[in-house]
Image 1: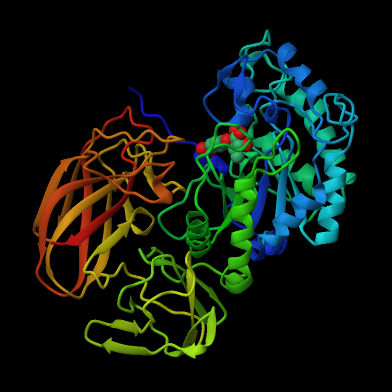
Image 2 (image 1 turned 135 degrees about the vertical axis):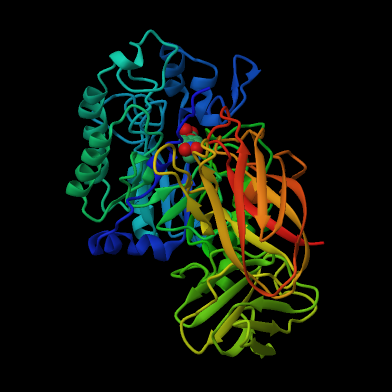
Amino acid sequence: MAARRVRDRNAGGRLHLTPEDEARLAWWREARFGMFIHWGLYAIPAGKWKGEDIPGIGEWIMHAARIPVVEYEPLAARFNPTRFDAGAWVGLAKKAGMKYLVITSKHHDGFAIYDSAVSDYDVVDATPFGRDVLAELAEACRKAGIRLCFYHSQDQDWHEPNASGNDWDDFPPPAKRDFEGYLREKVKPQLTELLTQYGPIGLIWFDTPMLITEAQSEDLRRFVHELQPDCLVSGRIGHGVGDYGSLGDNQIPPGRAVGAWETPATMNDTWGFKTEDHNWKSTTTLLHLLADLAGKGINYLLNVGPTAEGEIPRPSVERLEAIGRWMEVNGEAIYGTSPSPYAYAFDWGGITQKGSTLYLLLTHWPDAGLTLHGLRNKVKSAYLLAAPDITLEVSQTRNDDLDHDVLELELPPNGPDEHVSVVALELDGPASVDAAPLQQPDGSIELLAGMADLHVPKRGSRIEVHPGGVIANWYNKANWMSWKFKVVEPGKFDVKVVTGTLRHYGVWEGGHRIRVSVGGSSVSGATAADEQTGGARASYFPEHVTNLGRITIDSVGMHELKVRAEEINKSALGGVALASVRLQRA
Ligand code: JFZ
């Protein structure tokens, strides 16, 4: 089967940011944490249609149940959210420590939740509610000092014959649709309304670029910036022209991100309200994700899906209030921070930094203190954000022959916070660490795809690191990867190859044969689902661990590990979606 190139890079931000770009991004980088709101007609069926449970995400019910426009439109006459209270919604976002709010001004179903003169298919002209939701939210956000932003589906519009997405009504085939006309007649006029009638807008969150061309994406970005120069556009405007990148839904890369990225995430499994979706992530999981993403330099856009009555579901409220209580004590470790000085993550949690302070966000409290390898700075003091008056003991040693630094941090038996406890290390200057992948205190070595040297052929498909942290487009055996890493305790290691997926709401695909070699030691095998890597990170983009066998590394110092693909399953999306190689002490 012909190799299929993965085009997800089109959700990325532009790679070369000018000083003007960086100035526009400054508030967004500082914010780190925002509220996503998916609200519209789909909250009425709430996952059910004609008595049937409709699978999938709630706001896609028109698509999933292939509901003709003529049957879906009458929902507008039933939309009367009498319990809608913009002040309550914005107050909850503020209480949770969220700094921006992105609400669906128009989702794929084409219905606008503001008073649009472009189309009467909107909350003022077509519903008994008759109020301009965005106008009320704009006023509440202004009072609360929260940036108002809009999700606006610029490509899919299932109500319009010239937009993408509706292939069940009697609309022209995609190639025959006048998409340029749709942009001209509906998208741009509605963006003009949104960017001239509701005050300063923080960003436009575009989505699912399908028919849009690169020229149209560029033109739309210019169009937004002409109306409001400070308004950001998200990566899903398409073709990598966003002001920042949008990762896949609930997608969390294994290591630090390069550039400006945001992860949109659900609290359960749906964006739009679904009566039957009770799969709520715990507050602990949500805070672990916040800590993990901040450590990787990624904004966390956490979603709520209000009901047809206009209320945010109680489980969402409870979780956001708990997050807010955590933020009151620990927010300095999130807001305005830079990502970890390490390119890889730690199993005990995330690291952020601000000036000469390093924040260790401990999602798992160590049993007997914490050991950190590779920090070159002198630690002047250490304390818990929750108990700043209590000094934590730190000892630091250095092996000059190995150029290896070890920090030992004494910790009390239990962390002060049930979810994430934060230790602040005051350093003698901005953090500086050993950039090589290092053997960790437990003897393991994690080699992430994003840290590899990629060896590509002069001609043929070239592998690249997908923003989600796995290798993309590895269909050609002439491609291979290598890492140079540091060993401080030689011995025998079990070789574990971690492969992920590029499919959304992922289906993991194997069928490859991988060889790993270090010096004269080499093992190979077929990628298989020997183990699943657990945790919130892999719950939407499953990763599988293949045990390849055991190798010996018999000396300290720098070593090189090489990975080659001896057989490739070309039907797997993206080819060998390698995420990392782990060497675990045997
Ligand atoms: C899109 C929407 O279709 C969905 O309804 C929701 O609004 C979500 C936030 O965004 O869903 C997507 C879009 C892109 C990817 C996955 C789901 N992607 O690139 O993997």
